Length: 257
Image (cartoon, rainbow, N blue to C red; front, side, top):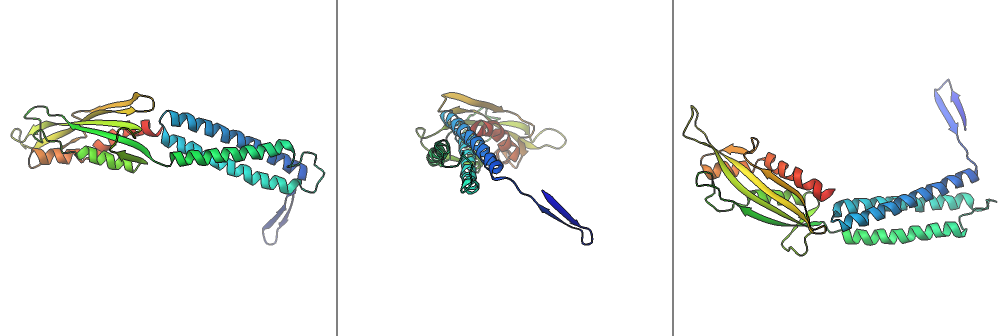
């Protein structure tokens, strides 16, 4: 490397040179490393797919694809610095041809996996309403479906697709909602009618045939609201962002990771 500093203008000039053989050796090592990383990423993605972790699997496949693109880029540069010199380990040797052939095989595998994983994670939702007591039941035994609609929208925003078929689902999400009267609006110096929005359920992984997570949100201090009547108060409570966030914080990591 050579440098020159023009003190009158403050400009600095630099020139760097490298021997063909050293640069070729660098590219070979880079190709070896990227191929190894791509193979590992593909292997991990296949394991994640088998475990029903499609979102994480797709991330790994995309990571493998990035490594393979680097392999092709380095292969072009390696060819450029080895052609026409006396380096005995040229790009066209059988060893390096096998490397490029292996990269091609891996890229075909990656493209196939991406096609298989291009569909979002499919989730079947089993939504129910649990009637507690006459006093606590704000909806008179009728399931308003408020929370399930909110969670379905949140899942769609996180690369998941809600399906009506259990057979094509990757996960089954069961959500059982209920309400609890917090205050009756008749007692106290400032009577207020308020209700808690409750939710319990589980996320079942079809691939592993196991429950991935269970959750219970009951009489939570962040999940109640007041209203003109019982239904109005409970509806407001079910629409609270805190309730949605508490459910998503339980189920989303299990789906994505």
